[in-house]
Image (cartoon, rainbow, N blue to C red; front, side, top):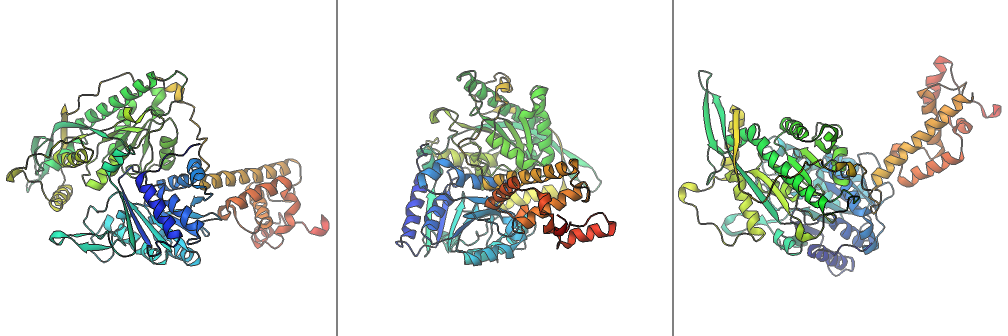
Length: 624
């Protein structure tokens, strides 16, 4: 399999870590990779680990990600066979929880901010025992300590993560920090990054600080290298009406209708958006995104043979303002597809027990082709088949919107030539999104000249005032009444056949035959197989009358499980490495657990449980 060519920032990092490994850049201990969302950050830890561990400068890698759903993607980056062949590496990492020995004999482990905050001593001990390459993904989520740490709410959680992770920076042998943005929405410094006073007294990241190497990859550069797709924005205007806060008499004023589109933000901007996302406007925007997706899928399907795999047709990601609205959008979308194909539309929110499995299916299989979420999938989701995004969210911070848009800008190798692919984002046509949209259009070269300077009356509101206005309205409360869509500023999308047309051919998942099995998946599979073999022996022995003196039911299963634990070194399955699980399977293939019950003679747990009932005592070796 021929590997994909390295992008310029990946080539730069490869040259840098090889220089560090050769002693030519020994003064560099921190590497900052500022890579535009979708530009390809996930390969950078593989490049760094291969060079630094291979040279003996590091023994292990610890890759820290902001959410649990990203741990599997980190494993997959190391398991990709094309890159393993290209770099000649045999490194694997595992998605670890907070149980002892997180590496289990592999080259490293992947954990989350929350995981480190929950068990900081465990990770500190690992860093003290081994020279570790620390990789912190999306480092902008971590605020620097000592600057307004008690602001409350989500910031408190982030400060707690920073407090737990900061000691690891000091213990790490080498550090690689990854981010798609070098600014936080709250204006605070980012943990560990060096700062200086720039022009006008504004604080900015010091890109020339001693001991630091900075690798940048802008959206313009990524577009020039065809690493990301250009974006088409579908801005839908509308108007909304709502009831304002209660007055002294307990009455609410009827406000509106107010237009979403305006030359600059004003006092009605956010309540109009809040109302639009919860009333008829949302369904109108959702319908346009749905129609665009089914048109795209129908066009791509028509260009393929009838029996071609159903990958690369394009998928729709719906980003909702909250979980209540996400479920409402899900119900709406399911009304638009045939009942038998309701499974093509899925929901992934934090309150759903199978949310992570749903995300994995959306990434790796033909179905679901539509995913509704709130925040779980907006950042870091590597799903190149996403071609259309319905941005039904109220968040307007630039880093957040960049991450959301980037879900659709990944190049899909199964969707045909690069020139035929394009990301489409449907969004409310409010002035806050319009300002973000203009910046992205300028960066991708679709603006021939900057807009005319706004008049004094149209100056945009400062971000702190926008946030304060939103918080005030949330405290006082408004009651959304109604909204409707008016005009869409994108004329290239036309309705097409039903999205579900031809999905019968997509029922069989496209096997990921070129991807090695990630360690955490292999561990779960082997643990399950060991449990099945233990249970099978227990059932067989009871059926053959070999277990008449043994505890029945679950008791026999647990006794046999304890036999295996004693026979294979005293580790439980949850603590075994891949090699140990494979050895346990081989042992079970050669031995009967009933023949090794003498291993339980000194196990007081089973003796204590059995003796009061007089039901079982491990048979003496002399009687065997």
